Amino acid sequence: MPSQVLLGLDFGTTNSALAINRDGKVEIVDVDEFNPNGKTMRSVLFFDEEKNVYVGYEAIAKYVEEISYGRYMQSIKAFLSDKTFESTEIYGKTYEIEDLVAIILRKIRARGEEYAGESVEDVVLGRPVVFSEDPQKDVFAESRLKAAAEKAGFKNIFFQLEPIAAALAFESSLKSGEEKVVLVGDFGGGTSDFTVITLRGGKTQSRVDRKGDILSVGGVYIGGDTFDSRMMWEKVAPYFGRDVQIKFVMEDYWHSMPPLINKLRSWHLIPQLRDRNTRESIRKLKALADRKDLIENLENLIDDNYGFMLFQAIEKAKCELSSQEETLIFYKEFSLIIREQVARLEFEDMIREDVEKIRMCIKNVLKNAGANADDIDIVFLTGGSSNIPYIKKIFEEMFGQSKIRRTDVFTSVAYGLGISASMYL
Image (cartoon, rainbow, N blue to C red; front, side, top):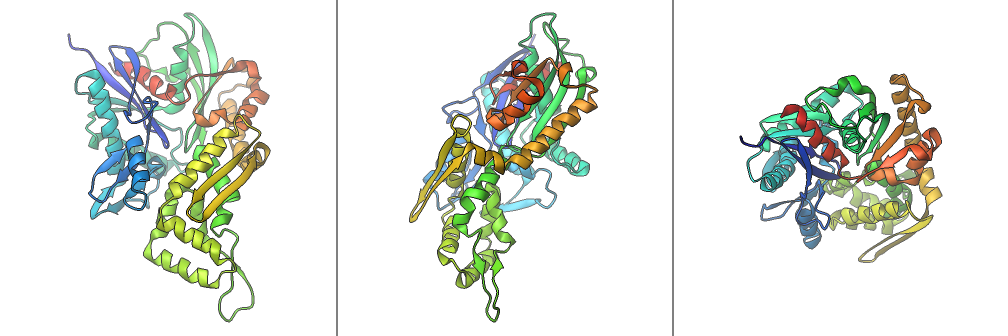
């Protein structure tokens, strides 16, 4: 009798991971041969001038190698709910967002098939609780992700909420007969999602729909990229003209920089500043600015396309603040040298409003479950931002440190998606 194989695919804003379910047995697949930690693949693309397309860590290597050339794309998942993003042209070829996502999914599928030793057309895809806080956009985003999976060659496509997948991954660690009410917090690059669910140890009824065990779900459109954006704006954007004043001819008063400067908040928006009309506007602004050198920094950032390395430096500092009270954002590019001290307390102040929204989301999820903090037996946290001390503090204050559990923050969702696949075997 042939084996039954399904894939559990966690397509993330920042990283993607893959699990394979073969006859009910789940394993994590090393999905990126260019990543020293092959268990994850960066969800990025690079198109070079010869029209070659690279994915994951190979894309990053090619991008860094050919820094002034090619087209680098990341955080593509963040655009799935954006109805204004219909397509983009890359070296004369038009790509819809479904095409871009499909390139990544196709690469991951190929790695799964290589591991399985056979063609695999069935997949359980993770999705956040909220692609968008607008319900119509949320449905639209899921339909786009499904279309991308179809373009990647999948025939049977199922969806599972990412925090529920993380919960199922944790359930596999419970002892037989053990029953727990668990709050799962899944912190991704774009969203933070939460689920209250009843979990039971031992052999699970894999073919049974677990909806009856799900007490509530909720999410907020805040993630690791949000925190990077805050640090960029507060500590780095001043080097690129955030606070520059503009005085127009025949006027006696100064103006702030126009809204185009806000694109510095997010890496994936910076390339939009390369538009010809925008570049001409920046050139004119420089002639009228009180700090022309800062506008020149902005021009170099755009022309030399080094936003990726800049955000890498910011992300590095953010991660260091999880274990240090203070660190340095250091970046050097030609004549520009950035050395910005940032303290953990300072960073926490930057993200305070975001963290409060996360706290309120958790409270609402508990309320919708008809539960309070004492009713929760275990708090299971996954995703990179779950390591941020300020995030940890929310859960420690609400539930107590003894209830908090963690596992591999980057692959638990994929593993849970693999478990979910048993429902369809």
